[in-house]
Length: 389
Image (tube, rainbow, N blue to C red):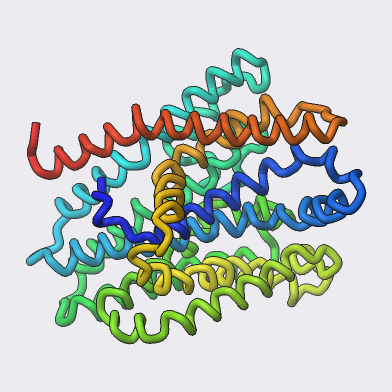
């Protein structure tokens, strides 16, 4: 676990924005009784109609940030190694799995137990797939159980496959320049999955639903994390240039993301299910290139912000960032769907009260999981690395 001195305030803020976008978008319907109020109701109704894409954009921001952080780690391991071996790959996996698997398996088991008790979903054999991140490898994740786990599958398969790609490439090719070698591997990896999505784009194997059949399927999304990795490469080998252009990249990120948000949220445009074959192909093939790519471009600027002027703001961003993984895992299938989604509220005051209660529960539960489960396991991971007992 990183010490406070090692945390980068800008990246903490990015992670906090990502998770709050997802949770806020998923839970905003609790406030629907307020939509009928004069004046403020119209504004809230407008927000309700336009906030849903923020859940997707938040996940794409997570992908970009994960790629940037993991890319920096992998690049450092490869560059510092005299001979990059499979031992390095295994050590990387072990540290990643200490970070990601315990929380995921814990909340998966809790979901299975809760849904069985509440008779929301029978325990079936296919749910075993969730333990191995196979629930959406090629086909859409089932809509009736732990649907938010789709993005975790994408990241886990990326963590598994990219180090293998680096290792195998290092066995077959002579490495004269480690930086150029890594760049070629990264671009090759990216191109492979872009080609796969282009092949699928004209007649998607999972049907016309772009959101479920492409966006949330591992096979078609492994390139999403790579844009952050490419920025990590620039951060390592072209750091001065990246720092110099960080503000311009931030501006491109903001403008590009805003345009994409408009295209995605404007239902009348129908870019995801257009009757025009060329538009439909372009959307299926390249929309999910642009989203993580534009969002990733904010990372060099965020990485340059080591502290904020306001200590309170920095602590708040750091707190949300630390609990973000637990917050993502508990907010929807465990809390919102079984306990808040079925509510049929009519009173605006009741809606406000339940919305505040929802946030108190998800933040409180996430904080407890982080403090008593996630953080101790991460400490154990660092002891394994250093050989301490």
